[in-house]
Length: 331
Ligand code: SF4
Ligand code: MG
Image 1 (cartoon, rainbow, N blue to C red):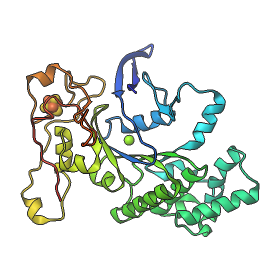
Image 2 (cartoon, protein in one colour; image 1 turned 180 degrees about the vertical axis):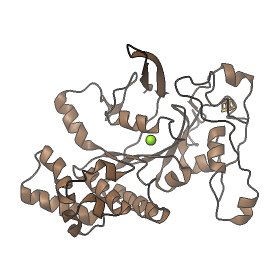
Image 3 (cartoon, rainbow, N blue to C red; image 1 turned 90 degrees about the vertical axis):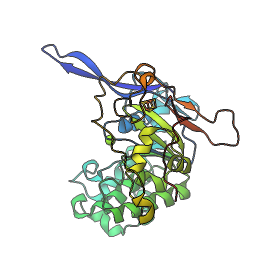
């Protein structure tokens, strides 16, 4: 709720704060238990910062995060320890998060030891079971991270995230570093695990085609804000935000007769600096549909189907959301 995270820009002799990088700015949304919420946007738009704040790895500048109805920044030490087990993260590059000097078996035992769970025998069984669940032979437990392929390392990263029976997992670009064929294997695995263990995912990627398969709903971020959020089908077929339309136009489609007739929207300019975002609508400097009002007035992020029980929720922040009639992908 109104989640905001600013990072100070330090500089000068006394290392004074010279400004603020507005990484996440007044973002409000809900994640439903058991769903997979995809989050897309260019690098630097605040996706990772948002994910880390949800996990309480970062303290927000403002706003709250409620988990099961409780503000996670308002908990006792004991409650925090319990919550930690329920929330896990899968990283883009498991290599940098796996200690290169430890064997896989030791890496996977660590969280269980930290939480004092089970006897050595029980831990061994738990680890072996998880290796099977993520599709790896337990032979790999004797190896070091560098002896594994990228896909195998990501399976270890997933096994480690599952060790403590979590409920909520932030996948931060979990498949972005992998080859396309391995990507789909890992996405399939994550989907199977979600069903098996009733997991809830916050699935971050910079590419809409990656989140498409795994998401129930998708949030599109631009410069620290969520600009559109709705179910996957609606977002792909009837986008309401011009930024979403441009992201969709970049996705190649297998059907050549449709592909040929599509317009590719290339945004002008670069993403503006998040320490000094544009006034009004932050997207106005690059939006093909920008009008005068877009420079001066900030569009409200609101549910366009509010009060209409027949339509699913469709949140958008654009002054002209109802008028633009943007192109989606229908197939
Ligand atoms: Fe474009 Fe204006 Fe809508 Fe912003 S509010 S997305 S600038 S049309
Ligand atoms: Mg990131």
